[in-house]
Length: 306
Picture 1 (cartoon, one colour):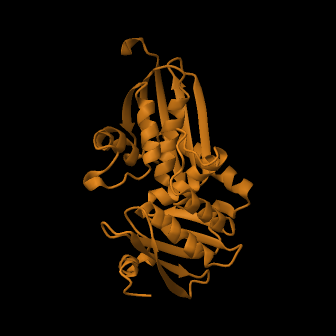
Picture 2 (tube, rainbow, N blue to C red):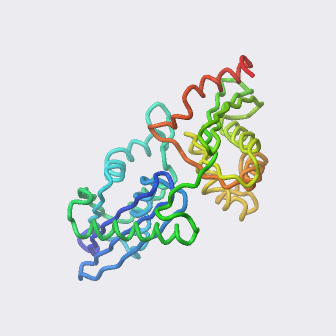
Picture 3 (cartoon, one colour):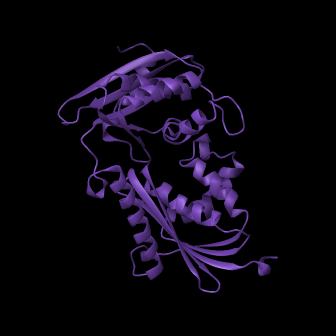
């Protein structure tokens, strides 16, 4: 059957400046007859890895029928993820080893579903090594990002404005119904820091992240710029990607279920609306501002430190 499929060649690229920050993606689709099509897009708050995944996802979505695809990417994260890591994630119910969450799970799930339609060969190409097609999609991604930044009125290159910096951690001991949180807040001058802590009865760690983020945002002056760093994908993806859809559907998920912790999501959204918030999901390298916060959060859960 695969011999009956039309063949297409695809090149993709994505990136941010800064990372995290405004990002763009680009893709080149080359049909068997040589016809070429450019695709690109951008997001105001994202990461390099999310843009790499988005580029592959969006170009595959443009294929109107099952195809034999040779897809070229300079992202080892994308290439290794799709060919090495993803089968194990899916087998474990979309979890990493030791039940750890998958970063960018929403995009990996969508990309996995899209790949089931096609017979795809994934090829890694060295970035910025004079491959004309790779250079072309890099330019597409950069141009898309720069257009978005220009429309938003940001400084050239998307440089961040002076902002309050926040790092956030939570602690919910096994079996406990009261959790603690800790935040370190640095003022825009970078000369003053303070540590905030709190505790709250909760049903889950997910709910605790929402309560903690709302509390620290409410402590800041209205109208200020804020960058909030946290490692939790439920918080970051929820507030940057899911909330708008939930609100549009009357606080229902896509399958019609009621959104969990609706009241806390609404309260967090209201607190964020007072400010200009950039939500930063930490990866393997946590924010230096977070040093020692996990212990403060654990102490708050045990009421050992005010």
